[in-house]
Length: 298
Ligand code: GUN
Image (tube, rainbow, N blue to C red; front, side, top):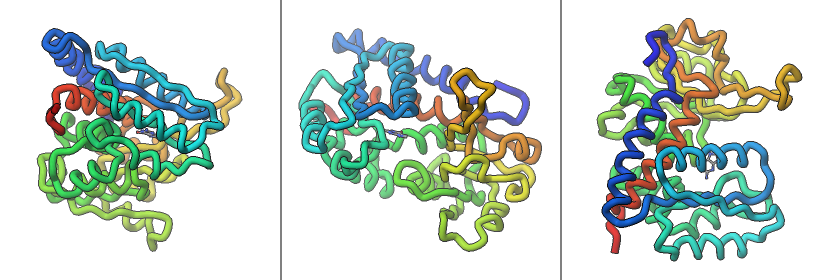
C-alpha cells in the first residue's frame, strides 16, 4: 500500500474482493451456485445508476451472480413493495438492496421495513440496525462497515481516541457513531456526533483524532478545522460542475482534500476512498448471507 498518508480504498477493496472471490468459489462448489445479489433501482438518478453499475461490476469481479431490476420513476410504493416481497421469497437470492434515494412519492422507510432482515445486506432494516446498536450479529450498514474495515486494515488505533462524526444520516453518520463507540477491535472511541444544530462545530471537529465527514456538502471540512495528525475519513461523493471534464462534472468529497492533506495523519481520497469499500462491504454481507452466518439458513 502507499507509503504516503493516503488510505487507498480502491486498492484495499481490490484485495478484499479477491478474498471474497475465493470464498465465493468455495460456496459455488459446495452448493452449486455462487452468492447472488440483486439491486433494485427506481427512476433515472444518474448518480444512483452509476453506483449500481459499480455494484454489479464488483459482483462480476468477485464471481457473484447479480442482476439489476430497473423500475420506472412512476412506480408506486405498493408496486415497489411487491417487488421487494418477491425478492424476500426468492430462494435463489442471497441478498438485495433498493438503491436510495427513491422518488419523492415513495416513502423509503416503508420500503426498508418491507425488506426481510435476512436479505437486508445494506443493513438498513431496523432489526439489523437495532442488533448492531446492541452489539449482536447483524448485517452492518455497508458504508460504516467499509470505514471500520479500512481503519482495521490500516491499523489505526481507535481505542480511547476522540472521533468526531459530521452528519447524522441513518445510513452513515448515526451508525458509524455507534460502531466507533462500541466495545470492539475497531471501536472504544469517545464519539461526538455533530450536525446542523451543533454549536461551534469547527471547535468540535478540531478536537478529533478521527474525523468522519458525512454531511454531503462539498469541501465542508477545511484545514482550520483539523488537528495535526488526525485521521480523516471522507464519505462525501459530491458532483460539482467542471466544464474541463467530458461529462461536465467532477467528484469532490466533504473534505477540502488539497487544503487538509498535509495536516492529516491519514486521509481517504474522493474518489477511490470510502466508495469502493462500501461496495466491498455489500459483497461481504452477501457472502455472509449465502453462508448463513448471521441468519442461519432454514
Ligand atoms: N444510496 C447512497 N448510499 C447507499 C447505500 O449504501 N445503499 C443504498 N441502497 N442506497 C444508497
